[in-house]
Picture 1 (tube, rainbow, N blue to C red):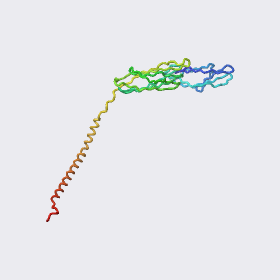
Picture 2: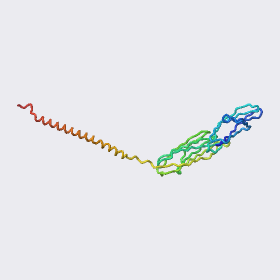
Picture 3: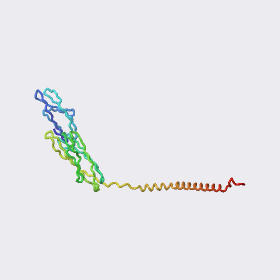
Picture 4: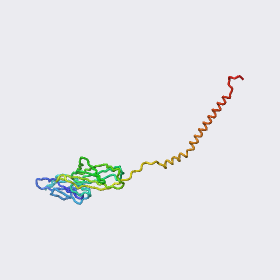
Length: 259
């Protein structure tokens, strides 16, 4: 019949008996409190939020014959829920920091914590007077206990100012009342802020590292210079040796001349 964060009220179809008299035993999580009721409704108050109870209805006639009836499991609403038939919770997450020309990722997870079906008619995000929609052409239908998520990536303008900016999430929804059909639920809204920071500086040459590399190479310069001098000296020696051989060949007498 109704559920709050501290109470559960249930009802059931009446049973019939030849005597015309029927009492009922209501079991909660398999336990009976020892009391009979002649009505077809039952309520449990002073419960904690998010308390789950399994109910079992058993009909009893004057001869104490038992007839098991319907059973169902219900959970009290979260502490923040104040509705009786319907309760919608929203978890809004988003990127808290971006840069001019960057993006913000927004996600909204919604859960039906009541006992009536809920349909999400619109989800919007307003950032600095610019309104974005997280909903598509189809509505998000949430049955009892179901959850759903809608997300959107919002682009931050290239000329956006550095600093803190506001962001507002709004959710509009309906619930399917067992008596009156679809009715509009209390809209949800949540105001947050996000920060726009300066983009990182472009990559600069690693001057200290470059200087260290040059100093390191300078320490090995003698190896390169020494090797070059050694090769140069070897080349000069080979040239001198070759020149001497040519001069010696010219000075030797020819074998065709007489003694």
